[in-house]
Image (cartoon, rainbow, N blue to C red; front, side, top):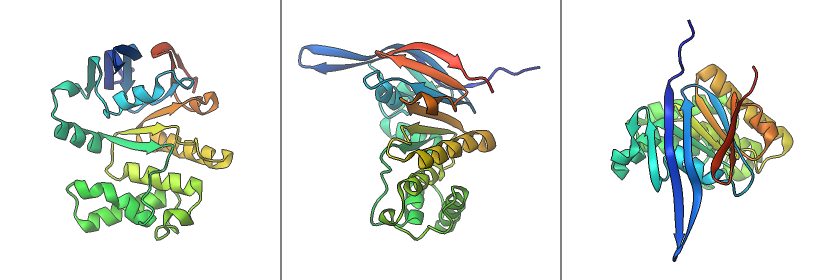
Length: 234
C-alpha cells in the first residue's frame, strides 16, 4: 500500500506586497504550495516571475504580507525571530549562486563556520566538516582558500557548508549560475545524490528548464502566481 507523502513546507494563500510610497507591488499573488518530505522539486520561472521572493518565503528568510506558512506543521507567524533563526539553522541548508565563502578561511574553516552556533564540540565540528568535504570530492582541498579553488570547487564547498548542520531541506538558488557547463552538471548531480542517497528534500530555484528536468516535480511560476505544476517521469 502506497503511503501519502508528508508535507514538510506548506504555503497557503501567500501574498508578498512591497510598498513604494503610495504605490504597491504584488510580487507573490496567492501562492498555494505543498513541498513534501524527501522530494526533489524545482521552482522554474523567468526573471521577474517572483522566484527569489518565493525562495525567501520557502526558506523562511522573509514573512508573507498575507497568508500562512508552516514547516513541519509549525506556523512560522507564531515564532519569535530568534526561534525562526534557530529553525532555519537546523532545518534548511542554503546554496546560492554567489558562493559566499569567506576569503580568509580555508575550505574546512568555511564548512565548520555554521556549526559554531550549534551545540557541537570542536572535535565533532571538525570531523563532520572533513566528512562532508570528502563527500563532495574535496578531501585533498581542505586547506585551500577560496581563491585557490575553481568555481565548481567553491560551490561544492558551499554545498558541504549547507549540509554541516544536517538539515532536512537543501534550498539551492540558481546554484549553477556562475559555473561552466561541466561544473554545473557536477553540482546538479551532487544535489540529485543528496536527494536519492541521503533522503534530503531538495528545492532548486532556477530559470533553466534543462536543470529543472532533474527534479521530480516542476513548479512553474509566472507573474507571481503558480502557473502549473508538472511531474517528471522517473
